Length: 132
Image (tube, rainbow, N blue to C red; front, side):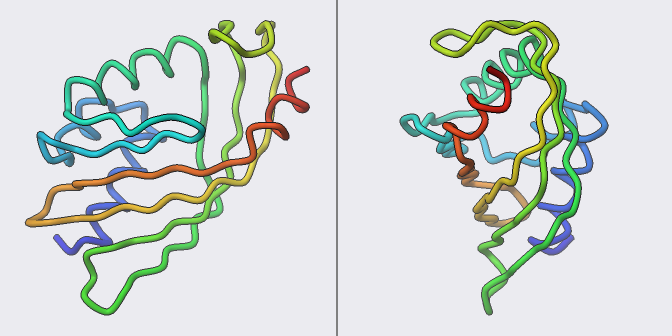
């Protein structure tokens, strides 16, 4: 499987809420750079993040555009997230089933068939406005 195919499978697993499938594509020392936060290292930390996100949000991703660099190890992805804010997240507005549509950019690195880095960027002030 190419790096691009690995990243595409990762997002397919996300849309299917197949967390085990997502985790299987990650390197044990995955570097997860969350939007507006510090980098988190390790598959256990990433798994806990997924669990938290699953409790608070119900999201589907669409309108993917993938970009690769010549060596094929780094993939940039632009997509749209359509979601429901189902449980209040600490430090954010109260949740009561608000819906949102938001553009997202992500940057991933793949080595030996495993994703070693996931970095996500989105406009947090816009998201807060959409759910407030």
